[in-house]
Length: 373
Image (cartoon, rainbow, N blue to C red; front, top):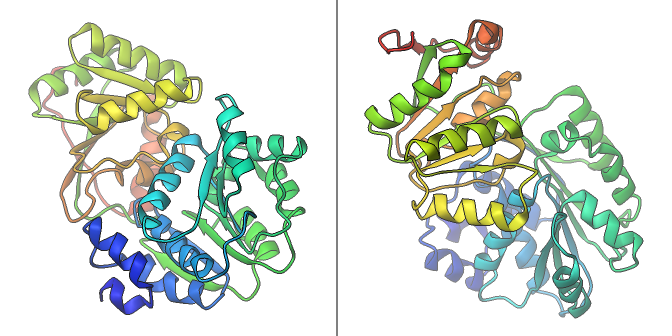
């Protein structure tokens, strides 16, 4: 199948062709036509499956076919600044040849530029919940004309405690609207929220969270907590690791690891919620253009990080939730390329690792021959 088979308009096809996109991903194949037909969607998919194009392309097509207005016609909610920014960047590329305006708003930065964009009038608003509510309370945003509502990474929204914010936002939306709901998991609280929002939805499930990316080679290193940084430097110096995304559980841990690597001559940056937006964007840009070799991230900050040809993901600390492990290693092994995922496990983390292997139904190779075993 090609994008030509999905009833997309010529301007959108031209934009996709310019980007080098020819064949849709499975979620795009399944979602685009139902969305064009006005159906609500419940999409279960991991990160990196092409969700953004799956919902933004049909929304752009529907909006571009109508008389232009200055009103917000589509609202896309995302849990983090990074993901919101990435969605906005993608929409910029997809909408190159259509007359549909959009902007992105998030906290952690001055609202002046965001306010200026809103006053000009936008058709698609990409937002994080906190800043959206803030600007709504200031009377700068009205959602009474919204026709398309997208809730992206709903599971992460709930993990971050946004459920009450989401419910407040929903009360300001028109009852008659199209709702597109995407989540990597289908936990009971997720389904409860989805059932309250969706009307006769089309259910789409792609690469369930229980399955690890097939092209990712996984390895496990047992190591004491005090030797983890030494093991990381050893692997980076001897393991032919060109480009690595390293995960920690805490912001403080990310800062400490990045500082240690830099002091050893390994170019690194940390990215987490306490960093300014400018610092986060500079770190991500440096990582993408490979002037930074290692990006150390917390799970929440990592949403929206999409780097081409990323060779390695390193779980410096094992996540407490098994599903998070699948999300992490899914950052590599994309677009038909192989990837490598390494995990450092202490005795205290063995329980987490046991849950992971149970979830993914795979045995992970243990590397015993390292200096810090």
